Image 1 (tube, rainbow, N blue to C red):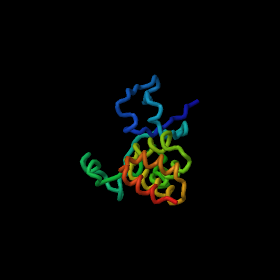
Image 2: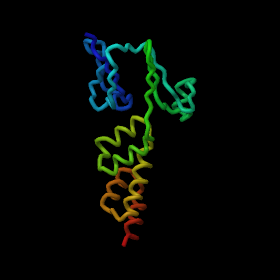
Image 3: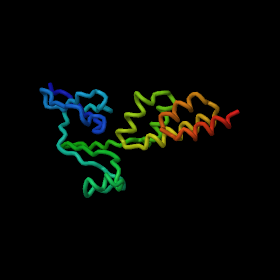
Length: 164
């Protein structure tokens, strides 16, 4: 019988600088296992024949400078076969997922790779999360997050001097 195809979503930022190889069956295999963000299984009767990226506002990017200048954000991918169209988009905003991962203490293992992949401002998000922890009197957690945010030391000292 036919074999299922597997589509992998790979972070180019995490995989950057890591060697990649083509497997014997023609699949891209990153040497950096952390670069694989998600897998999708395509049924055996489907053969993907095309793909298009969906940019913010549904627009196609004009050049790499549009993305580099912050003009467009990748919102998803459309794949098609002879009889099916797949649209892959994230359902929850990336910053909300990032903050949820932080709340679980997964900043290094999961939140940071996600943030790097989708181009989030990690330092700002860490600082905002630290402020929330501080406001809820979770001082040790706030201190950890402030350190990750690279916030100025005088801000940390000022906040903690004023803590009850």
